[in-house]
Length: 426
Image (spheres, helix red, strand yellow):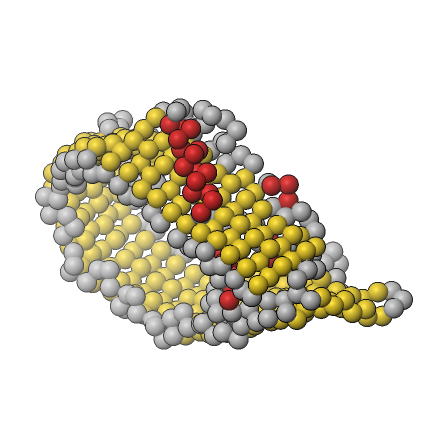
């Protein structure tokens, strides 16, 4: 009964909502038919059987070939609905729902209004509900399992890595599941003590005093202490570190790395056998190694990166948000390097993507990130006045939402043949 109501709600919201689907606009297939009224209305059927309908910015619907995946948007990003052959999920503002198997009436599902209401059935067929902060049980939430609460923060219980934690007046009074070989005492934040086979740790008035002894059975024995926010020290077999006004000023020396923070996060210097990095935030930073050369200035405003990958390398230059030029290189079977893809954006004027087989140019381009399928479906046509697309030598020009549209195709004997279109069909 609950799942029937849940599916009915999914169906109603699905007519009005949706989210990210396959990038139909970027697929190499051609439009067999297309009708547009400016940027506001579009109906498109592709050669691979997929289709797209939009009444922007109110509504859009993308359907993949043979209905394998359907995506519906309503006033995106406010509401989304996504369904494929086995699953479906939706979101409207902070309300959400999903069905793990649309073909199985007994499969798991969930429904909620974050962070107040959660309801559903787990994969193990356990029904649950929760009304935060009054009362509830949730099988899994982020990294927590078997989460239960009553009048939070009065009572809270959950598991992490199969170990149970129970709190009364969270976070002050707690009980942790017994662990073999571990002794523990805690009256947070006044005093805490923990003794394990590898280390012994205690705190007094956390976080002001903390000290730890790493026993000889630990991989890296030694000791550490911190009097926050005055000073601290780490003295271990493979690590020596001192801190002043932690975490702002420190020097660490290990068997592989030397690091200075004077002060963090403004000046950071780090060196290993294979790499050197320097940060003078927010003015300049670099990271140099055999596999990567990275430079930035003005924090994230300017950056240049050249990084090797297992099958090639990537070069990228960015002046945010106005300019991005990114080239991906690969090697052919003979080991000769070639440009696999080049992406260029001059914001807000244009973007261009080019590969050995296809290319695409568009103006204007108001989206400051490379690609967002929701923006492409619902908003990008409002500022897209002209597009040029090339696939295997055939070039298509499209301006003013199809008012001007023609295609040039390369043919063996006739050279270039021009195919014109009135903007209402292709």
